[in-house]
Image 1 (cartoon, rainbow, N blue to C red):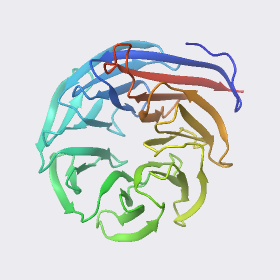
Image 2 (image 1 turned 90 degrees about the vertical axis):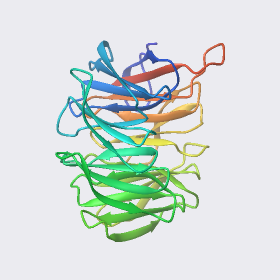
Image 3 (image 1 turned 45 degrees about the horizontal axis):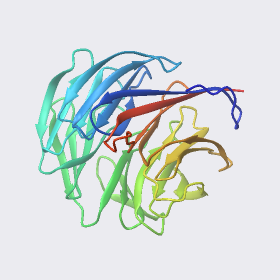
Image 4 (image 1 turned 120 degrees about the vertical axis):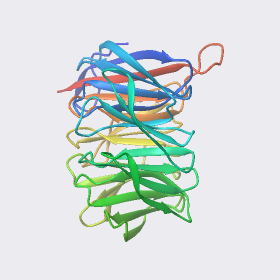
Length: 311
């Protein structure tokens, strides 16, 4: 689908759709150079796609036994995956082969890399956090929390570690001590997702109260909220310049807002609740995926890429 002009200073808009899974896609993630996109599915597989700045696919590889995934921030061909079978695996996107594997204590639901690529954090359904040393691929920290832990993230320097919780708080921990530095009363309902501004100035939190809050990372103060969604916020992402933030939920659109003003600048229509949005780290490309159904009401394993030029 092609669009020629849009609001928010965007022009030459396009949306491209890709299908490669047997069931719905629940996560999308770009590599550090912005040249490859990994899509993870309910069918327990991930595919790696070569995508150019115009959104054209050139080839893909295939991994199995995958529930969540993230790319090595320093190596454009390495992908870490977490699965419900308690495993964490490291894959080479050039060969599609697993090079490292570790078995943890529970059913894994979240995974993220430290920005320098040395550690991987994994969260499981029992609210336990495990930190893996990438070189040895073995756990170096384990901590069980007595509250619901949702999405996790490091800041851009790796000195702070964030937990979003079911209590509506964001726990800010020092790293590597994992000592609690701040407990931020961020929302009136559970905090589901977090995104770190790539410039390092802000972080954003999406909540069950349908709001996205923007926080100053040095002051730990809330600067503004984005109120353009009507349903619990499932996923958020900053673009590569930190100008825009994308957020999505069960609403019939993906919202793109201006970070500085809080104003909605574009909405991408979608046919189903969204599970994952992620901006490309180099280009104006936004990948997004959700609970699409085909005409027979079966899960449709698709994701889409939205692209634009700035006016």
